[in-house]
Length: 100
Length: 172
Image (cartoon, rainbow over all chains, first blue to last red; front, side):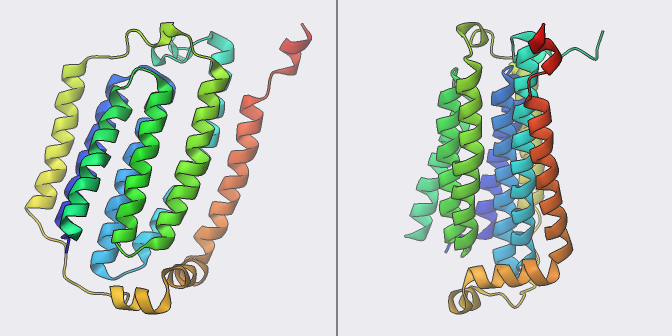
């Protein structure tokens, strides 16, 4: 029987790997993928705790997180395409239209 | 047996997560991300949540990842994107390590409550996970469900508006 702590530690590892990716990469699409990874780590925590507590609410939360992630994917990728049309680049260093 | 399977899957999940962060080409990152999603779906099955595993495969591996791959192909990124891939690695490493130790400390020095709800593994086996989840969503969480549908509609309209080519610039 796998204990709850192992799932929680695994999701902590996945979350921090995702954090590292968001902080280091320059390609906007890769940063986007790292955010999806972090969301999935949180989903694993929710489902592990939901199973541990014998309660369905955590899984309903995961359902809504997936909905928000799908919406985020659609809008975020549309933004990246619009930005690429303007600047011919998706490096986050070029995302400075509001800065100057 | 379950323990061994868990460790193998966990190692695969962590390695593919590292590949998501470290691969140079975005397509390789996407394939590694797919691997992580499939591993997580396996974990959901081990946690007696088969419906969530199916949704994980369909929504994440099927829809979101395909969208990402489509955009990568569409943008036709050249090799200039590949060079200079990193900001300050050391600072990010410190921050990510801090996040990990915070989470690890929180999980390691506390234990989840032992309060047991009514949905035990036996109930899930007997009634069926999809039915239980359906009851939870359509009875207790009906309003958030409706709001989520509006959110998806807004996202679809927003995506079309954002990605649409500006008609004025096309005519020029």
